[in-house]
Image (cartoon, rainbow over all chains, first blue to last red):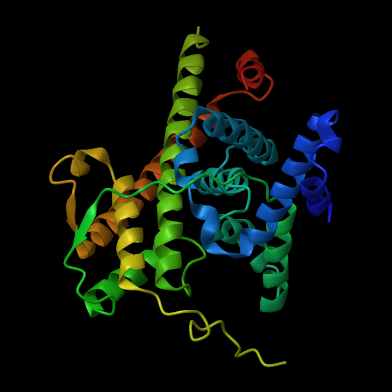
Length: 211
Length: 91
């Protein structure tokens, strides 16, 4: 509605260019949120995982989660730490990928939730925590040989195995699994970087205060 | 309420080979650099998938080891000690 207004009166808005820019951004983000159901959102999010900003966001979330894990009982089990790390990772993903949503809704699955409710909850997650910007797609420079047919049994089998490794992708189609795997690998790499940095920090501070 | 309804790909357009090739090549770029430098412009799709699965398993194991290490470190740190305060201030 407001978009047609903006395009119709460009001359009138000369004095209100800042609000026009703000409105444009609002329309863009709304359009982006609406486009979430399509698969175009995974364009550049794998690359964002390499940025320092993402790692810092994740590290702070991880620290918060770990503090909660610790305050519960005396010594946190490694499994709890791993789960907390995965949850922090999924939260940092802002719900744009299936694997992150699957991790976040997984804990609730154990509490008598029916399948319908899980789908509804996932949809709520999508609309609630979605925010983001799209960039142009990067051209791929790698040539893939010997893909005679995508229905080759060996290829299919490997895609099945991959779909079991990436959370939330067991029953997804092949292109979805491949896309999710790309983002998941980038996210896991960031998780390893952040956790090892945190471990270094803790071990150094622990050693320095031992006298 | 029929619980049998699952989203089959029958109503979506057929997935082309080019699409798959595109996705696999994109995946290939995210595999570790050590393997990427040699003959990085040609790859067999099967091999890429195999390496992806191995790589994800490796990453899972690394996160497992790291969380083991973190849990040990956390249990040796007192909750109210000055180190925890330092760490909190560093966020």
